[in-house]
Length: 304
Image (cartoon, rainbow, N blue to C red; front, top):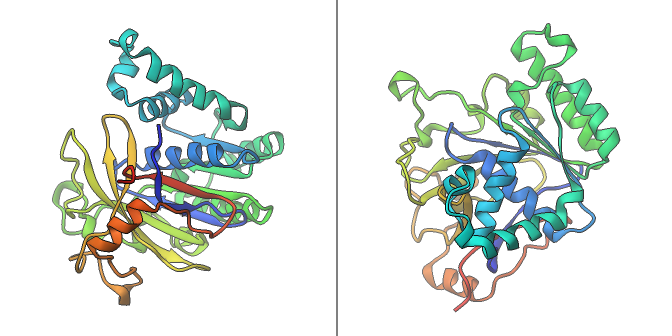
């Protein structure tokens, strides 16, 4: 289950948040974790998820893995589950408590169907994963024009008091051969195919591995950086995260002491790294940032 939180990421009603990452970096897992924890923290919240690549069953299986600690591969294969009955039962009970407020939209994945689903669900949070795959206007428009229409509709939806979260693909970086990605080159301009995405977002984040290679290095936890590359109305704050792909869990890490080589500085909009003493004090006194009504806490280490 989730431990004491170290910090928060805000899903703000009336604003559009974008999260982008190269393939395999866990952007869907991160957003689903945020949504599930938001519903757990806020009984009045309701969420509509529009995911064009993954079935609701697979999304839920990943959250069962996160909440139970049972490897996702075992849950997906229904392998060796009898001996882990209690953790899985607890995870199912946690998800069952929010089940009547978490909705998944089926095909077709177009603006017209999303608008109808919003009328039916009346969500406070809308997740579109991912934005480049949403159709509109009968599927007749060129990709960039279609994305512009999607972004305009996202802002209209947000203006109704809904927190809109858009998951985006990123463009391939120039220094990587054979269509790869370099995490150090990713930024606001990396949201694929449309400057309208960059303009339409209130907050924009890039999720990339801290090493900067952009490659998936296989099993085992990976240290990631959630770069806060744009904020229209609030201060920008980066987060260091550990992603354990085996159980599909993100955990907040203390900031690295000293300068973050390759990730910019205060002049670039990054917050100053904290020293080890500050990180230790924060781990003993976990607190939520009082920003807005839809803050979502990341689990961190248990206090000493």
